[in-house]
Amino acid sequence: MIMRIVSGGILILILFTLPLYAGPPLDTLQTEVNKVLDLLRQKKLKDETKKERLEEIYGRMFDEVEMGRRTLARNWAKLNPSQQQEFVRLYRQILAKAYLDKILTYTNEKIIYTRENLLSQDQAEIQTKIITASKEIPINYRMIMKDKVWKVYDVVVENVSLVQNYRSQFNSILANKTPDQMIEILKKKAQSQQEGKKGS
Image (cartoon, rainbow, N blue to C red; front, side, top):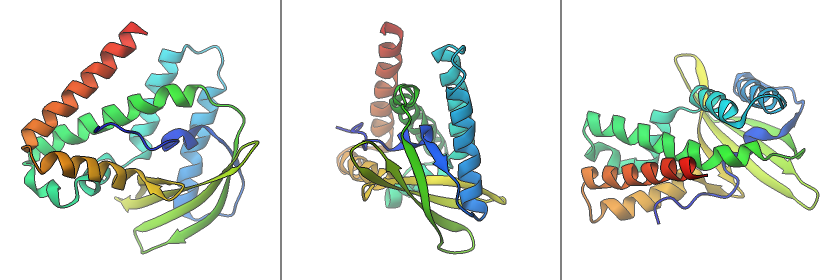
């Protein structure tokens, strides 16, 4: 199914961080993660308020267009500009809703930033590990700089890329359906998430 989620993908936003000397990509990542942590520590805030603010942080932290373009890969060009915009909007909505509840249930796991790899002048990968009571989970952020701002466009959890995982699903859909039909599938998924939220 289209909305199978890579386990733990954006969950690492919630984790405590350990210091590491960093360049601009890692500095940017840590800044946004710290904002998430500060928000989650405010116990007096209602969950709905936290979710709204988490969505704002998500919007600043992730390059939604880059993520959408890389997810669709060669199929991106099959969408007209209006379809691309609608795809990015729905994709963001589905990803955000899928992870917000998980983020709100965080415990005191820790994340260690192990390495910052500058792949080019405008691309980098931040290697991290989540330390739990029973194991270490490698999670890497892939980042890109646009307009002098670093943003995340992919998260790799235990060698499974969020972008590649969804790419295979969307490629399968677009092999038999039109871009408009794919967007309708996304709309139905987003609507069912919203209805499930109201019923919870």
